[in-house]
Image 1 (tube, rainbow, N blue to C red):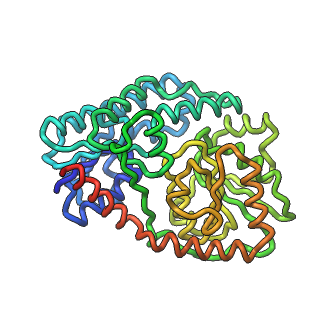
Image 2 (cartoon, helix red, strand yellow; image 1 turned 180 degrees about the horizontal axis):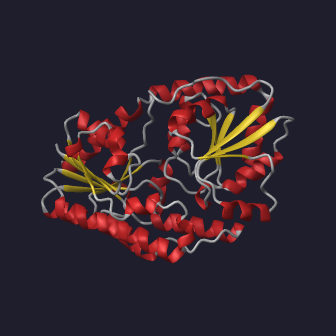
Image 3 (tube, rainbow, N blue to C red; image 1 turned 180 degrees about the vertical axis):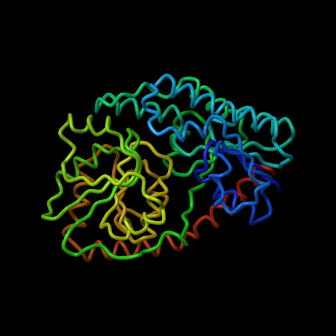
Length: 385
């Protein structure tokens, strides 16, 4: 069985590519990233096909938000359509083509015309569900959001219809597709793995303070206002809240307008994964309050470092751990629920230590990306039959 992959960036697709290559099943992986950024991917160069002419300069632009929404939207659209056209022209012989949603319509159609099977790999909720949730958040918090590009919605729905199956990383994502009218038998659950060689405990949280961590960008997806409300309600004489990820001054200003941005927040910006494990190991809890997400990889990474995770029902947490055993799972848009769980962990060090221990056991038993590769191949064999 030969499998070709396509992704606009790297994401989980390169983790899958390495697992397929180890099983001698990888035909090629196409990406919008430049080759020099992919030297550490541990794949033969002849297996990596790059088309970086639009995506690479877009990602390299230091202040691209100054371009304006219309130009950014057009650039993102042309980057995905361009990669798709390139893959369609150069797709190698394969049994299965796996294309990341939004940039694989023509290449998926090409694969099917040649007798291969087409898998649409969607890393989030159904795109219409995503659009609805983010519009609601925009109205609630006054953060500008013009909606998902209508062309992208139309394109992704065409991909869903064209594909032999759609793989998604969480039970929430599965439900969003079924609720949107996609036949349940067409959607396959395929949760992501974690690099257990990289993420592991490197220390322990301090005993005289309570450190809360958030890892990710500042956007409407992430439910940051609810985390901020919960942090304000948390009672502890030496509490901290640290943000690791891209910083948005406009988002911070919007939160300040609601009185939700405390002065003691630590903003670290981008943190390399090699250092992220230290940060996770020293934090008492990591909160991901997302209203819309496929499966946040940082949750499994934090668990592998012994950091207790508080995630919402829309983060994929239910596919990673059991509520109140290895972490906490709360409803979306519920800052009171987040605050109560933080308070439990802050007040009961023994409870936090026990949940940390259980989280480590749970994530280590999952098998990391190796199991992800095995599950993916099982799905591909099934659709071939």
